[in-house]
Length: 142
Image (cartoon, rainbow, N blue to C red; front, side, top):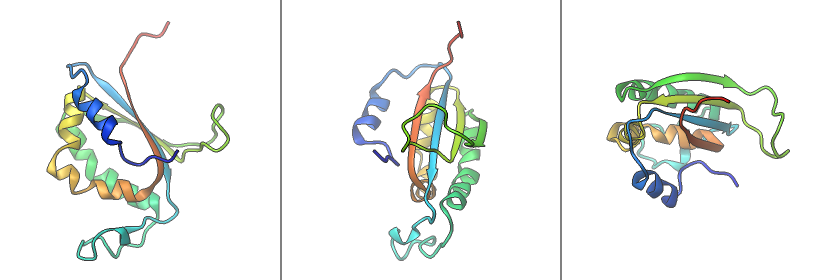
């Protein structure tokens, strides 16, 4: 099932879940639209007339969100294009993977609920055909 934004249930679980001071890494799996559809925005929105690809729209989001990530103490650890998917259902393909570290879930929540973030998240939403956002916590290997 294609998913772009969190469900109300997922967001409620994120907010009500354990919020501690442990660092987290958010794993972003991204599948871009061929064309971002900015016509879904109100005709009065300044971005309504943009005609760009999904990847270009996500780049706008990335440029705007990076300082917000850094402001809450986070950092983009890694970003790369996928080359080959070795283990996955045939229909599940991703264009890009991004790993973003935050000092805590609280820091992530502070960012995504901020007014500044709400003003730019439409670039992400309109750029993607499908996505996954998975919270992970560091563990020891072995």
